Amino acid sequence: MQETQRVWDYVGDNYVQRLIQSKTDGKLVALNSNDACGSFEGLEMSEALLNSKVEAIVNEYNDLPATKLENQKLYYESLLEDVKDETKREISEAVEKAITKKLQKQQTKLDKCMKEKKLLD
Image (cartoon, rainbow, N blue to C red; front, side, top):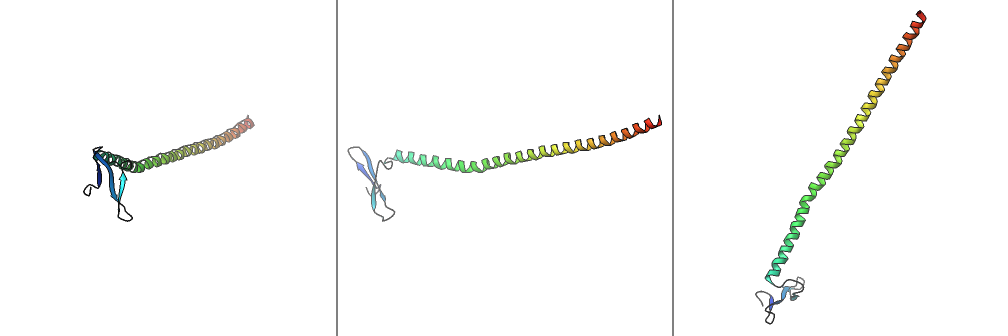
């Protein structure tokens, strides 16, 4: 019992308890097999489960910055697209305004020329 810190059940032909040392007072305390896996296979399963949890956390931790960067990229690309659309609209309005102003000047000149022609005829 001292080497493995487990109690052997001769009837069930396996370990039934595991003795652990208490962190508070240092005494040996029985850990029931319901609380922890008593067999080597159970320990392997427990370790595999822990490793898979750790791996999942590491993967999530590694994927988080990539996900955040992708979200930021999409956000700023949409902002750039909005600015481009606004710029195109403003340019279009400015061109239309300039063309309208030039057309009005040409119309005024044409009207003036028509009046002069009427006076001369």
